[in-house]
Figure (cartoon, rainbow, N blue to C red):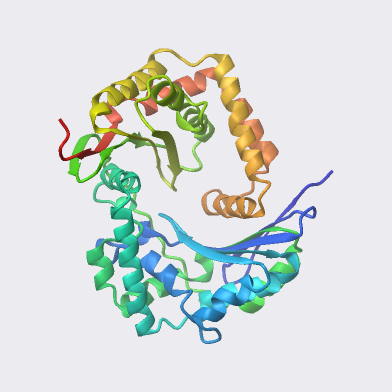
Length: 413
């Protein structure tokens, strides 16, 4: 039985369209993925990719901001966007019959936005408030500082929102310069998943997406050095917020699944080692988990831990002990099989959502330029050996590579 069908088309102007037909659903998720994120900024315009994302919702030559907001909501759909390190995504979820409307709205935002000066000033204040919100959320902020310290002097370490200083100085001309450089056909992917016909999607996109066909000049500068060691920062916080980790792997790396399994074993879910041994057994942290990210040429893996100020020292010792235990005593084949089952289950259950499938399609195109069906992914996970994950653990968790960023309450003993 065929559950889905993948197709890919590259138009003459360089616009890439990928889709996965899922006939068993009545919805479609469609996203426009532009390979322009905070990594493609310079220090003086940090935050411009995110600012631009906001501005495309503020009005076009055909629609007001209110019209954009109501265009899909009025038929039960959803419209949103986000900015990441290496791309910006504008996406919608709608009933399959409203696919033409979704393409029309998304293309109008991408191709016909007016960037009115008064809207730029209004949105500047919104983004400055957003930056304040992160400053007031120490568990988010410590992770942002961790990434900045991990990739020092490189745009990969820049905060996606920018700083108050850089956002305050962004002019309309600088925003348009970034738009004109990056929002071009060859730098853009249209991804869709759900009950749709690929040829019809291509036809709609050909009619609506009138993006420049200029050559793509994107160039990601790899980091030349990586942060390591301890950074202790006194802050007015009620508990300690700690982020420990190191450089990970690129999205296309052959040991990607070993790293995903290590992350799952360490800190994904209540059954993970960190949760069970530090929170449940010792009560040394309310919140503890691990996370990772994959980029074009590298990545990161890290652990977040939040604990009471008087438990900081004990919690750190327990964390070091867990990492050391993983390096000294290889995981059993039984535990490895359990973690494989957990990861496979998480991936397959996630694909019940058309939005997740759409996102997966786009990321595979960004980083691999090819499609991997879920059966191939499961096969790759099953192929991970006891020896290969042991080798990865020894390399990734090398103490000489580790970076530790800590927000410590100012009045800690």
